[in-house]
Length: 154
Image 1 (spheres, rainbow, N blue to C red):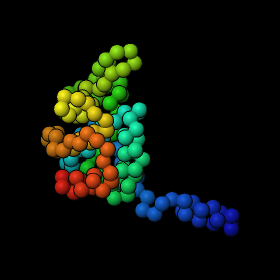
Image 2 (cartoon, rainbow, N blue to C red):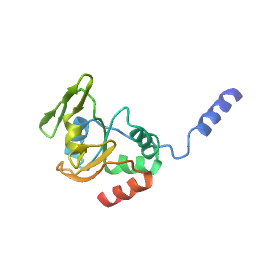
Image 3 (tube, rainbow, N blue to C red):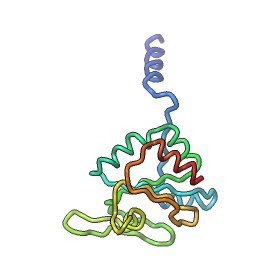
């Protein structure tokens, strides 16, 4: 009994206070949920090799305030720009477009992460309930900066 209690105490001690898990949706899931509960979409366009993308994943999106705000007021979608699966969104099917041997970019990433005729990673795009872009930022965002942006949008 004492051993179980000790393990339980260690478990709760190891979990950070205010631990929050960011809910991530696919485009299809978010679109279906938005029919009954309209909220803006926050799309994080990233790649597996982008160091600033990884930094945002491991710091900005792990911030408790950010997680709570995104979970409550937005549909958060993480879009891997090099994902090869078709995505059905806004009555259109977006596909991966190869650009060479083992290279390419998803059409939806091109649509949401192009700034000054160039796709940049990471890009944070906020779409209104009518799917129009209301905000786009192509750079690393600290938690406090993102929180300020989310407050202005909602």
